[in-house]
Length: 344
Image 1 (cartoon, rainbow, N blue to C red):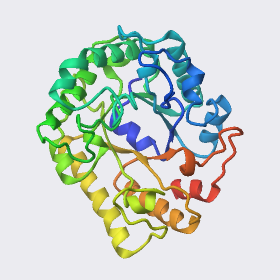
Image 2 (cartoon, rainbow, N blue to C red):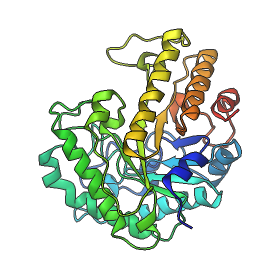
Image 3 (cartoon, rainbow, N blue to C red):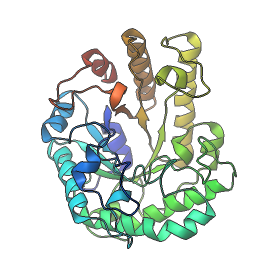
Image 4 (cartoon, one colour):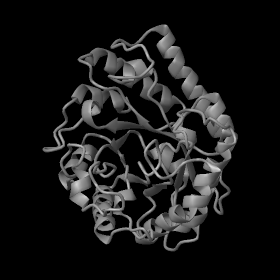
């Protein structure tokens, strides 16, 4: 049976993003080279994803896996996706769904600072057809998968100058909104379960500051309650990241001001959700390990508790110093942190 976005958001207690794996790219690849699946998947020093890892994520208590996928090195000049790559993405997606979990499948580093998708008129004119073709192929391949499979149009789209949080030209919000609309229209025009599938749409760069939220326009849809808003959050950057240009680095967290900032974020997102009549998810958040376990636990517990009070599911970004699992064995490497992310 079709699932609504509201019911899915209410069902997802804790989400996990498989970072730096299917979204990785081979930096040494020649322009236009079709990269074999395992050469890109392991290019950022992670082993290939396994069914055992996905099972371990579910057994740890996560009920949704976000699968970031970068398609650029697996597409011919004509825009056709390499069948071997589509098969690999389908395999991992199948493992997630077979475990009874929700799955969010996206177009990842195709956007962002080094991608081919940017929020500008010039990029719309140049690549909107390629973007629509990519989503037609993804939609066709997964058309018959169940309603627990959610499509996410793109990840952290920036303007042509790769400006974070807010485009250089405020008018470029309109081009991001057009890409969101094209994504929705393309999936809805396909077959199988896609006319009623839940679709996740992002703000500019995934940001959640007031000016970015104000520039977002909800896509028109043909079916009610099937759109899921998405933002990301790594604030305060100097705490969440080991390196953060222009930010004061720190390894402590938990002041009254820190707590107020989380409450303000969740209140703002709840208002954003109410304004558009759609649930919202935080598709990425997390903190890198700086040898500060107590501060990370305080942050994770406070962040997820405040989000849960507003009905907002959160997805931990897992890669490198964010990692919660041993990618080789599936063992939980940060059990206390995993427990902090869970309800109760």
